[in-house]
Amino acid sequence: MKDIKITRTKQSRLSSLDFNNIPFGKVTSDHMFSAEYVDGEWINYEIKPVENLSLHPANLALHYGQSIFEGMKASITKEGVPMLLRPEMHARRFNASATRMCMPTFPEDDFVEILKLLVGMEKDWIPPVTGSAMYIRPIMFAKDAALGVKPSDTYQFLVLTLPVGPYYSRPVKLFAETQYVRAVEGGVGEAKTAGNYAASLYPTKKAIEKGYDQVLWLDSEEFKYIHEVGTMNIFFVFNEKDVVTPAINGCILKGVTRNTAIHLLGEAGYNVKERDLSILEVVEAYDNGTLTEVFGTGTAALVAHVEEINYKGKRIFLSEDNWGASEYLKAQINGLRDGTIEDTHGWMVPIKEPVLAE
Ligand SMILES: *Cc1c(COP(=O)(O)O)cnc(C)c1O
Image 1 (spheres, rainbow, N blue to C red):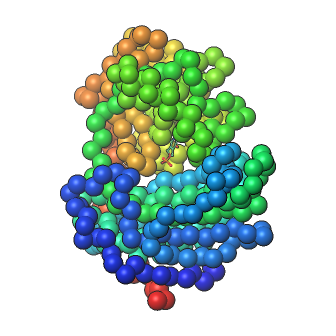
Image 2 (image 1 turned 90 degrees about the horizontal axis):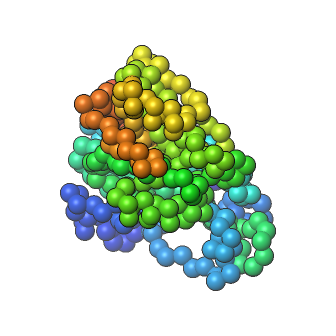
Image 3 (image 1 turned 180 degrees about the vertical axis):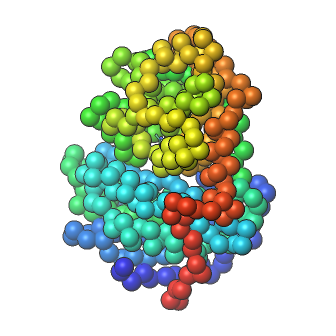
């Protein structure tokens, strides 16, 4: 990897953090990673205090949206060793998003090494409370200052780390959307790109006004096949053992947690299928009593139980008495993360004490 210039903060902000009360997304650790893409290569690898950026008003990312990100979490074992969960899969997905948005890829080995360095350096920011973690936010955006719809020649890559307290996810209520869509075939639904989230805000606001938490997105042709939820993939359990999650079709974000769930549940004896799933099939299963459980998966909440789905006024209610697969999954992933369950898949990447030049 290229040399990294490291500039340490003169005054850590760590002492001002209340570990028992961390507002999600608002507090960053002291340092961030930064690199720039100029003349066809990534240069200026740097870890430095988090600071404001200076952007020209004609910045291409602001106008035309060439901007992608990742989201993952570092946990800490009982022995105090920070751990990453499947970081190389996030690196691959970041580059898949970059390619779709006509942006340069970032070397995947460097991506993982940088996360290890930065998290190792900021590990005291991981709250010493079970279930706490460090949220890691890599982001890449266009840097050219010249209007015109075309790919930027220059880019910036940043990695922020944010301490997060234990995530107590209450069950969510989903509104199946039959007017707006999140993704279309051939579109950018599979990319973790800024515009997808901007586009989801208005329908989500409408769903919240109706008393729901999030939108359940359906396909754009027939409003029939289930895609996913705002920042989560979705799983349906029939007869307690038959688990179905919508198959990847270019419209669905390929969640790392989704993939982990498919493996873990399959190994535990659940009959897991990735296939097209119609909302009508879900309604029918609810009516005949075979729909037992619905849950979402994603880095932020890990596993979120669904307590209600509203499809065209038809209300589907799910009971917590049937939280079998979701609770099993949550316990398994949490156990991997805190090192109490053996990692037989080679998914966990421990971060040893980093050796850093001053
Ligand atoms: C990030 C994201 C997910 C979840 O992916 P994970 O890798 O499991 O965190 C699901 N759907 C969307 C739209 C997302 O942006």
